[in-house]
Length: 310
Image 1 (cartoon, helix red, strand yellow):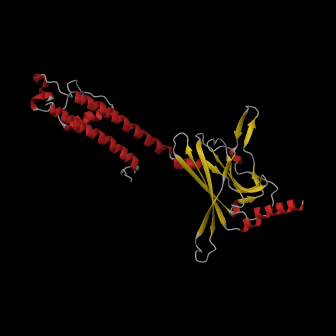
Image 2 (image 1 turned 180 degrees about the vertical axis):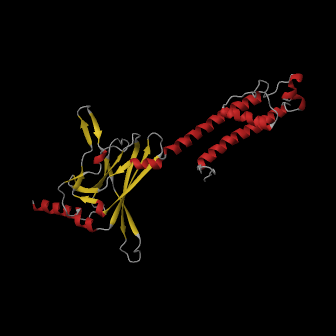
Image 3 (image 1 turned 45 degrees about the horizontal axis):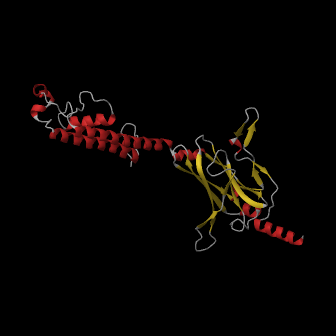
């Protein structure tokens, strides 16, 4: 829902409109209650109005009250704490004093919610995802004598992301003639290598082990080059300063997966100042490593045959 001014077309979100309406409703309810108290106390009778009060020596519940408009202005002054001026409450009516105290408490709660909504809107979690960096390429290499697919992700902002979670999905086109235009989505088992999920201080690698449960188990280096698939990756977490969830996404096609490469280290020790430095310009930098060109299935069969021959 949006509202626009004719001058500069400033947009208002639904939350801002609801918050403003809540403020006005709070003041309006109080503005309706105060006249009731003044009527019960006979403050609005002709002889007790402020213009004739010097002759009668009447003490009203609220000074300088003539009707609904003046009581509504009084409730606005209480709500916004802009000082009373001529209108002020007296000790004559305990019910009016109690109503003023309740209005102050409710007003403080409403304003606290408004500040939270405004702060949440200004933080813009969608823009926060632009500071989460993914590598331009994914790599395939050997880890602990197993072929692994990995990519790297880092956060360049000082405000940390906690409870980090990563997911990856393999998307391929169905071979079935009936569902020729359909795509198949398979989730890949991934782990975050380099840090605990709560401790995301420097770039980490997200690793998928190509084993028997992997859909990439039977693919070799040549199959990766000639394949027709795409790997979608998702990183989720919580912004530490605001508690808002964040989700960043990227993808790698078969041409963006480099076989026989690994990522270079981004964390270096500054010998002069004796602290670690993270060089984010190296987040996509790789180096060549010796990696078998066969598939993980063929590699396991080869190792089993070699073990039996020995």
